Length: 130
Image 1 (cartoon, helix red, strand yellow):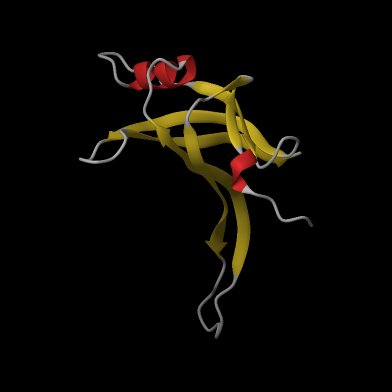
Image 2: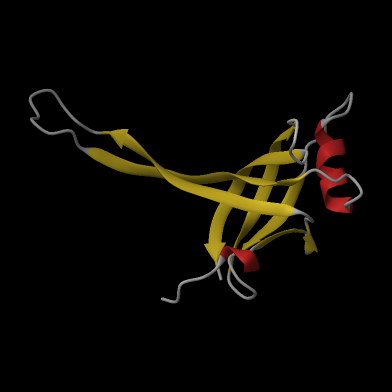
């Protein structure tokens, strides 16, 4: 496997690049139901449902159409959320993909720094890697 540099990473929602992103994280996990019984010495488990979620972080800029759509879908009097096909590129050709539901928009600002935006999401259905 070749080592990859993060400078070539990006995020696309419905084929449109989300501008000014600086990083993203995906967490894939598997539920495990406890199948241990009285008298067992070691805990046992049964694999259950898989799920995934994550965050994308960047510089806050609502002149970017994608950032504005994400922001406005949650920061309104009647939030609708966004369900979107997402691709999280690790380089120009390889990416994780799936359907996401935007669950949070977290702008932050500090003196002497750029205004930042953190977006949280929950996967809906399978996560794949191409």
